[in-house]
Length: 419
Image (cartoon, rainbow, N blue to C red):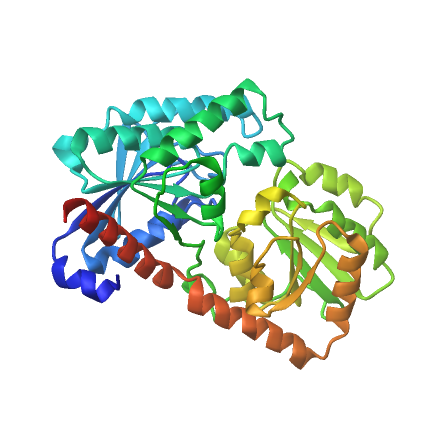
């Protein structure tokens, strides 16, 4: 059903309760988790209000929100951020993060839902799936629709990326939880384009699925930003900007740099993560690799637009048969960079947008060949690839675009529920 047809019969305000333990806002400089913050501002004109409940402790925060009370409200355009006071945990402690998931879930039951928030719909965004139990509770207690948003597929991710046995008690428990919450959702929003294949492999119940990818706010790329560059104008610069975790498979990037050490090419790695020190050690003898600490999304974008190319890589895992939705694609495309993607995923955005080259995952030699080929291309041809990516992201992956998709999805779900 088209949005215009729904709007003819849908003329009341819609109050959406968003449960996302790792939601954030630009003021806290996480570089992630800002999806619902931006959607709130975009959907305000459509009479859709977002009350976003998030954890007041997040290992990605550079600045902590004020959490003097159990629940702490912060006004934003289009709704509120409600910070739940939580205990701090060590970023590298899986036990600490797991405890935080349960603490967040328990405290959700003290939210003043009926008296103050009065939602028409509850949307729970993973991670973690434990919060979905509260969404199911509200569905039963208040008789409102429950939408589940899947940003990462668990427990498949820790099994394939982390190497945890599928027979581990934690994984068995999580698999049971996954089936339980999938079956009870009225609708599922996925950031991965082929998630429906995983859903059909997991449960027999037919649940409607909408693919709404990650997005970017074009206004973060400032035309009048400081033009002083960190790059050497006499050398071709290729940049990776993002998390440095095992799934990102960055060893192949460093090995490619070693293969090209005699070429006028420099490699930049911007970001932090559990693998950073290992990567620095691996690159110890390389003089063409530079590591830069994590920075704000706006600063990253304005550095990227001065580079010559962007790089992204993935492990060769069956997990990625369901697609990916990494913010890095959007960052590189908005900055107008041609991209080299080392992946075996179907429907790689680089191929769809025709904005660079895709090479086999983990193949350092093929990566090096692609980087050299791109560096030797005429500048106007590289520019065309970058423009292809920028046109694609502006047409498909901005918050203005996905806000329309969200509005259609939310109103369809509510219309189906209430007739």
